[in-house]
Image (tube, rainbow, N blue to C red; front, side, top):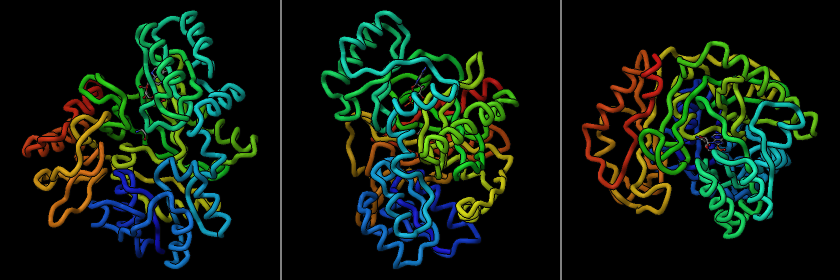
Length: 418
Ligand code: AMP
Ligand code: GLY
């Protein structure tokens, strides 16, 4: 079959690399793709938001399955259009993707169906938000309601910090329309992990657990980012964690979405935190996580395209995994998640002896140059977290990474516990 992936980041590179290996797939296309994706897929020059052109391309190229990577085209209804045109697509409809696109929608759904998450209130008025923050005290968490590329969350350790964040979002439009409404929620303490599931209506295929590293700098310091590194599996979590998360969170949400008349098809990504009271939801995403997908799919032994196509046809199989641990370290442009320069060569970095997923690169003459905040993800694998870490950091230590930075402590929490 021919497969089309929509997007241009590391997650889409991982999807294309996987589909390229799947025996059921004859040809992989990616719109628009990047310099790394071009090694495993044919990149086509169509933007993620060019709905009409994507549909025409899928029809003309006999695409049996389209997978939409990023949140924006999902929120804009790309899935709805593909479905209306009779095309097979793996991704939620515009309505269902509100589970990611509106934090208020997700929180209300969880409250209604008693799905464990932090207590919260939503506000559009700074005065009311401010009264609430003062009554609750710190630590407390302020979130922009809409999409903000993983950056619209402030975990405030002091009341002042919380008030500033709320003022910034509500009074100064920090994230434009996305922060016209905010969610203020209780701070949850515990270990975070990501649980992605392939979902179609009531059918669920769980993917292996992963752990992301959201803060920009070592020891979880600095601002929140889209994600600076990940690994899978998360072997030190108690054995019953996944089952609990499935029974208390994933299953009930999937059922709730059906009851609400917005059945979910696509990747339901639960960002969870293991509190003393069990796993609780920090956020839902309506798509594959980035960088979690790179490390999770790197371990997948099953034919992903077949798994997805069968799931869309109502046949649910379980995914199979390699026992190896895979770790991914993101190289980001200096300055990210703030402003940064583009067009620095990554060619010598790519000489390092490890596999690279490209997140933001492009071809420039005979060179490959940076083209985004997150630029590359170096992937290492080994029998355990220690050997996987050794592999990836040995490779990165062997090259010059001027203009870029990466965290040196990806997976170190797991190391301490293993
Ligand atoms: P989000 O974009 O909602 O995933 O939030 C980004 C990051 O902020 C999360 O990965 C957590 O590290 C942190 N965070 C979000 N909500 C909470 C919470 N209620 N308690 C503690 N930390 C949180
Ligand atoms: N790594 C977190 C996300 O994809 O939202």
